[in-house]
Amino acid sequence: MRNVYLDYSATTPVKEEVVKEMIPYFTEKFGNPSSLYDKGLESKEAIIKAREQVAELINAKPTEIFFTAGGTESDNWVVFGAAEKLKDKGNHIITTKIEHHAMLHSCMELEKQGFDVTYLDINEDGVVDLHQLKSAITDKTILISIMLVNNEIGTIQPIKEAAAIAKEHKILFHTDAVQGLGNVPIDVKDMGIDLMSMSSHKIYGPKGTGALYIRKGVAISNYMYGGAQETRKRAGTENITGIVGFGKAAEIANQNFDEHVEHCSQLRDYLRDRILDEIPDTYVNGTLKHRHPGNLNVTFKYIEGESILLLLNQFGISVSTGSACSSTSLEPSHVLSALGVPVEMIHGTVRFTIGDFTTKEDIDYVVDNLKKIVERLRGISSVNSVKGW
Ligand SMILES: *Cc1c(COP(=O)(O)O)cnc(C)c1O
Image 1 (cartoon, rainbow, N blue to C red):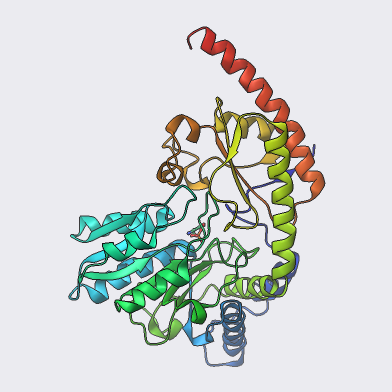
Image 2 (image 1 turned 180 degrees about the horizontal axis):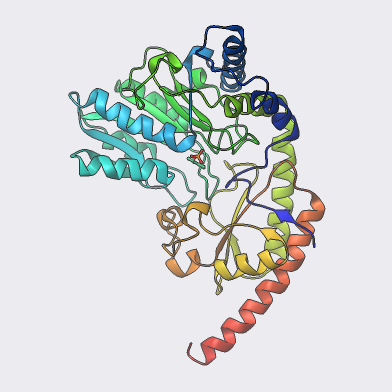
């Protein structure tokens, strides 16, 4: 049976070249980067190189890159680190209703500790309203956090404009760029970003590794206490293999950027056209204009996304409903709710995300099977509705 993976926003396979770069650091180059002999220095140099590779992808200085255990840790660090550092200045944070749970649940935790959090709405395109952002700012606001690219509907947010508003009011500006990295152009200097979360396993690197960009001059409290690693900001012996892999993945993402975007967006548009043309009562959620090149989020009216997912799985096809993180819960997606999609339609929604290894034949295989599956499910659901089920 054919295997087609269309869930690149959940995670990506690690590229061959990346694995090759990592392997020696499991075996002969196993030294602790903090050790002063050659075997330690060898590891230390590998981290220096990876830091440069990640910095280059986003136009930062290597000294502004701090390695973490992934996007979730980076988001947590920002929320709790900013709150701790700036609590005497204020207790108000502004974010959006469509953030990843790593941001939302961190903010909700702060609310329990007495912080006020404003969660901005999105419009029918899936984009935040900058007027609402401006009017939400108070003299107690210490942090504004707006994601660069949404993980469910792929919409790109106006980060440069939002960062300018934050700067005008001297408020720290953070963006969760986990889905944006390698998929949309990022220049932290030009965009005026103070803090930015990144993850390795969404850009063909290994899992359990990420980074936080902290602009020079920006101070937030440490998240991990212990040794002197990461210039004392993030203690703990470095995940050297992960960091080396992340560095290599960042380098490849930088070199292949145009090709990657072209490849994904062409196949995504082909998938969209075939679904909308050949399967009735389907529509795309979120604007098609400013969107992740590989993201397609589709509602199939009258049927359950979960049923589509399970039947596609029987044909070796991997997709997700809502977001991967909520696939074990029946809560309707908070992103689609914020977009104003009615609950019954949310349950009929599937996310397809395309990546570097997707082919046109894969898309044809998916649509051919999808057509049969949807027909079958709709047949069943109309029979059941007649019975009053
Ligand atoms: C995947 C993801 C995260 C979490 O990153 P991990 O490295 O898996 O912890 C955070 N934010 C967004 C937008 C994501 O897509």
